[in-house]
Image 1: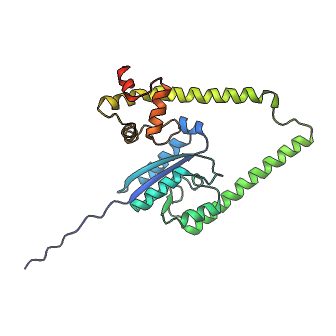
Image 2 (image 1 turned 30 degrees about the vertical axis):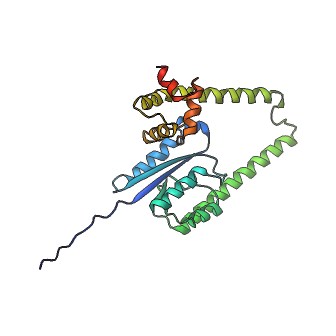
Image 3 (image 1 turned 135 degrees about the vertical axis):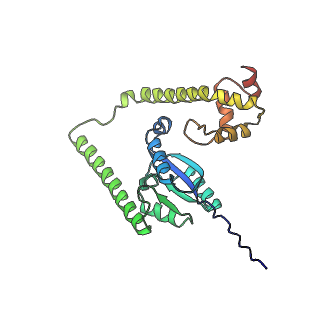
Length: 240
């Protein structure tokens, strides 16, 4: 009788990449984002791995409301994957935030400190939190000193004009991005996909990002084609 030993190959470790930029402008231009993506790529290079998802957040480090991070953690839990970030400060500069994240049941690693343990992460988060608090205190003190010297802070006379100009710039950015991606949407529809939700899936699978650097949905597809002057998907193809 021959004993046959079957060795099953070990599954590749799965990773979910999370990137955060502080402003919408950084998200659109790639400033900061490209450096984070390069750091994650360098970290994973040479490792047998499966990069199962990537999430981009546009939010300040002081804000604990992170919908994209929530999505990344949900997927990581589902796939039993490790959350990978370029730098610890891309998560937050808050000890409580990091502590809650550690209790979320998801392993995570920072590319700038791959060997860091939980104690190290707590210490680094504490340092970052203290640094952010000192910057805020210095800013408040400087503004108070300027006000005491009689310096008029802000310029309320041109505030409405500045707000209007900023709003117009946002509209123009949205219109420009809609025009940019319309060709890809038209190409997907020509291939036989007419559902806005399935078009969104195709855009995401191709790596095309929304104006804010996120994932497409049926609603965002519909809003995009309407920005280009169309009401339905069929009108997009008919216009070509």
